Length: 282
Image 1: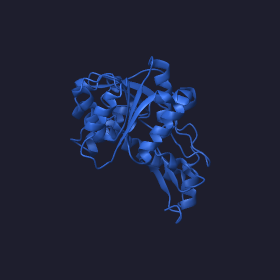
Image 2: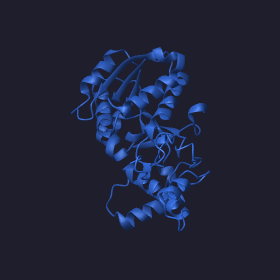
Image 3: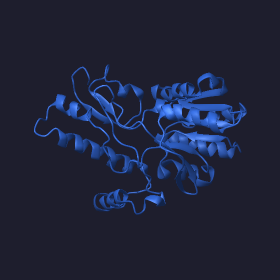
Image 4: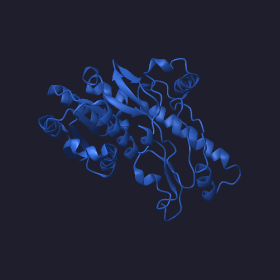
């Protein structure tokens, strides 16, 4: 697609290769990149977990390795605190054996770098084993409806993740104008859809940015101008991003969102805590 100069905007992945305008000048992601997210988890662990012994579960592909590399960078000279790394294939039916290995390693911190199905399995299996580590979950698996509920709310208490979007199950947003507008839009166009599924929030936000990008092209609807406009956002507010998180891009910066806020699962929803964080300030 890049060879043929076809714009691919706001790709639904945090893979670091899609924020590389030098090698992929026609491709831009949307969400915070996996590497940066994992850097934050590593630094937060060192600052908050005494005598951390870290066990890592990650998918055996570029997505999983992005997280592992970011975690190692975040740990820096303390990278030796990783006591066990286990991988799985996207086609594996379960990750039960991997969770058993992590528990048996003596790890007291669990880095759950897995997609929704495997992430939910990992949460549930850890609970079945009575393993209660400090649990970090990658952002792509934060959906209350798709992950936390299937894993069992009672098994998910205290899990920490990084967020950049509002969550429809978080009551603090009930009277937020952006959330109310989204809810009304859902009622009109997707009546009956499960609003607890975070993917609907994601889709709405990324579609808003795509629409704005096309508007900024005016009557010059060329591929080159589309990429120029996508690479020209400065402190632009997209609905349903967390307060304080803005879109910033440039010809040399293809990461539209570079900030997150940590949140912890409590009851049947996520609870934000701390300040907006960048990798360099975490």
